[in-house]
Image (tube, rainbow, N blue to C red):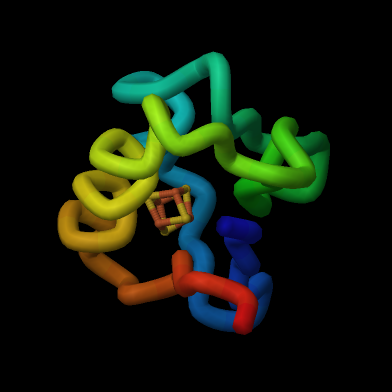
Length: 63
Ligand code: SF4
C-alpha cells in the first residue's frame, strides 16, 4: 500500500502526524508528507484509520 496526500486539500493541522508519527509528518509549508513509501501490512489499519480521520479527506491510497 502506498499513500498519497492531496496537498491542495491538506490544511496541515497535523492530526495524522500526531496520531501516527511513524507514517506522517508535516512539512514547513504546513502540508502532510508520507514518511514511508510502502506501508507494511501491519501498519495498514493505522493508514486506513488516518484516511478515515482526516477531516479534509486529503489522504488516499495511491493505486
Ligand atoms: S489530517 Fe489530513 S488535513 Fe490534517 S495534516 Fe493530515 S493529511 Fe493534512
